[in-house]
Length: 111
Image (tube, rainbow, N blue to C red):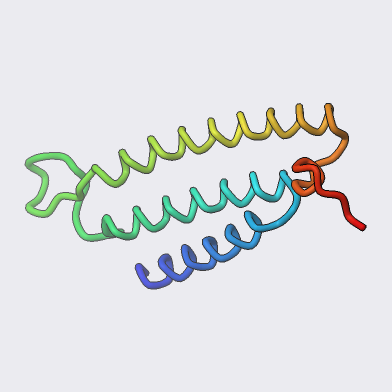
């Protein structure tokens, strides 16, 4: 199961890299969101998927470490906030300049 999740995380990183390297602002924002979810999957896989029981003391000998879940929950909140702020900034840029092309925003014109 860990191998499948690791491969899925690699596919998500590939898709995110493709989107981040595109010209559109919306694709870049979507790519960063997908990249954060790939990192969440990788952290969860590194923590072990089914190696122990629930983290309650006295129930069993092997308990699951709750640190990866806490890190992922914190990272999910932060990534959603960053995505929301980025979407608002992209919308504001589009209203001001009427384009979402990064080359045009930098001042380069197509010939």
